[in-house]
Image (cartoon, rainbow, N blue to C red; front, side, top):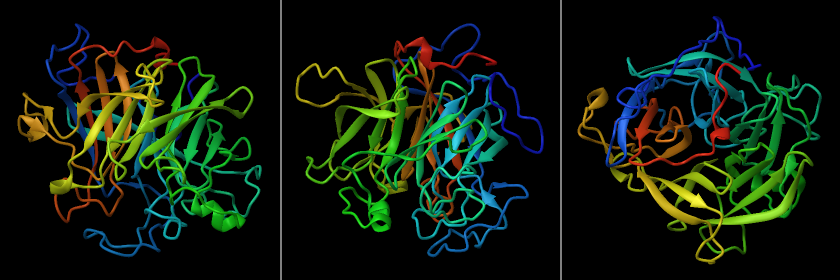
Length: 400
């Protein structure tokens, strides 16, 4: 049975309609990646009746007064398809770093895009907690509600019982939660890799950049293995090479098997990683620009079979997110649609020829769509010219 996330009203159960894309009668035929749906959640969207947040924020807030009276619904850094028209989307650590995010409560939001009206509805959510004291060090809050000063959660997959595996960047750690958001076991570290946030706490030496841990987390089609992709290069590795680490959910341990994803340049970063089948992944690769300075925002297929034997995942460009065809001029945009955000951190395969991509709006800081205006959370669907031939097991069972 599907997990239920509570809100002030019942969670929506919808049939996902993709404007101009997947319909009951089949797919629109396209010759280049084409925008088929656009939805947007306003930047200033908050969890009703929650707690104040943002008291430690400094810098340009793009006109939004701080602190906020409630918790913002923002910073989407990972997505799970529920199969009923709703999606569970992970909000990241809060306001960009450990020091300013102690009053941001880590949360999984339940959202429902409505492409006919270009809107997104918030259908509920859960806070992440540690009531059984699985974290062995001191947390920010005595009530064991997890905050952005405790972990930087950036990637998410569903487990076999409806809970979640979540990738953290401060450890880096793998975190296992039940369907109510309660931590099930101690954080699992990655042997031989330590981020500065953990090094400071433990007195060890860091060999990874700050918040450069598990930005991507993919689950094998049979559900047994997780593939955790670092955002940063480990000291001693070739600059721009990122480790993709295999983890066995049955044993609760890393297998020791590791792959390498090479960025197009060392100053780029990944935004998400998901599986297509047992050998292939979809990976977002991006620069740090926004608006006029945004250049590289791309979606690659990466294959672990390494057909050219160079020791790297084979990469094939799938979508240039700065150059998407928009012949219908959806949502008032021109015939070429761009996704010019600093951080783009969510991708999900909807069917064999359709993917959805979401930005992380870094509320209230990023302003990639309009200068000096805080970005909304945008949600787009893209029709592909040819099938991805995905493993059918990556899709959720409807109504499960």
